Image (cartoon, rainbow, N blue to C red; front, side, top):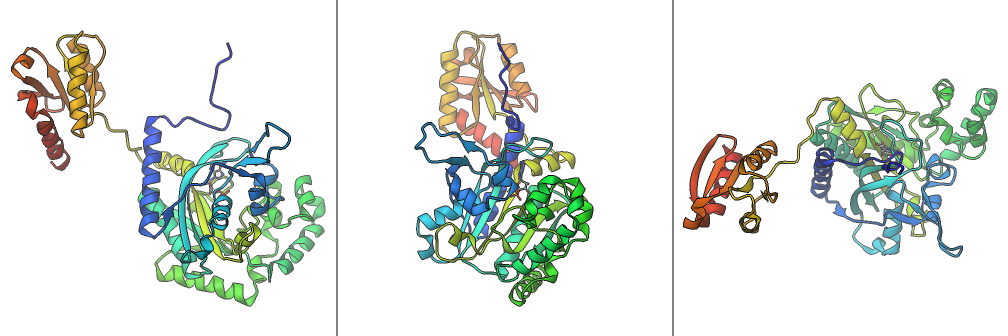
Amino acid sequence: MATLRAPRGTRDLLPDERALFAHLMRTGADLATRYGYQQIETPMFEQAAVFERGIGEVTDVVEKELFRIAPRTEESESWALRPEPTAGMVRAYVQHGMQTWPQPVKLTMTGPMFRYDRPQAGRYRQFWQFDVEAIGDPGPAVDAEIIELGLRFYRDAGVAGVEVLVNSIGDPECRPAYTQALTEYYRRHAAALPPTERDRLERNVLRLLDSKDPAMAELNETAPRITEHLCDACAAHFEAVKAHLTAVGVPFRVESALVRGLDYYTRTAFEFYVAGREGQQQALGGGGRYDGLVQLLGGRPTPGIGFGLGLDRVALVLAEQGSVASRETGPLAVVVGADPHDTVTRLRIATELRTAGLRVRADLGRRKLGRQLEAAGREGAHFAVILGDELSAGQVQVRDLLAGTQRIVAADDLARELARAEASHRHG
Ligand code: AMP
């Protein structure tokens, strides 16, 4: 029989890594709460139109990477797994009339995203993002607040040396003149363009700037810069974002070639990197302002801004930086027994201790006491509760596996004794 494996581009998060992910998700959720964001959960798949309209048809994400779900019947709607969270969250904002809520509506969500991309290091077909969106605030202060929140997430998560690159990509006022200038520039260099990029030149020229094709690097170096084409309102907004960043002590670097991969961005765009590692597939996270998106998805014109931070890449960087993943903690105690066959008493006592709120495992095999104790030690348990002859007198032995000591405890006092020992161990 063929070996069964997780699909290409996906991976199993085994307990140690899952514990790290839980820690990252908790870090994100706690921070988002502190900054006034509320949790939301949207479906992992949406009508494909949510992404086609919201992200833009001429983007890598929709053109090449959208995970479409094959319909079972011809009449079925066309669905796709979410490649990013913003479009679905804004769809929910419109659908549930959140325009009538006090603005801005600040939402946060963490979960898996799906892109049918060619898998490689740091690029998966299923990956996790921590995301925040502030919808209904035109900025510029909230732009800086969100960027500061992103940096704080990396700091709290223990990633060293994260840097933020910022740019303004203009708005429908000023971008057309810029894209015109950019188109003319690339037309002059058409002969040097790889075929895909030549094809995109007339359809969505901004994409060429963040092309993944190495042949484009040199050409993009000397391309016209959006920052030289911003209208007065966008230029003022960008200046104000930078002033707010400075005021809250956030160091940043302006990167005028930063355009972001999705169509809906306006004005502020930003990406987080480990300093010195700004290559392709290295972005730890990114985000930007999307003042046109709510309207694109059927709502009243409403500004918005948000970010998506990739947790898989944070995990990779933490591993590279030698940061120890927080291990899943072993049980406080394991209940073991001198009578290999008496699993009833072991299970009963463990159940009582768990009812008292303690982290306790029972050894439910039928092996000898010595083996049960060895297993408890290997698991990192602090105590072994040993059931033996004393049980008839209402007593058990409690062995401190870390200290190597042992004493008799009344079964009725067991939960209290273990809880006290755990508390003193934690504080001691
Ligand atoms: P993007 O919307 O492409 O800017 O993605 C935001 C963040 O999600 C990136 O900075 C990455 O950290 C992460 N990310 C995007 N695509 C992938 C992927 N295929 N595999 C792992 N992480 C990803």
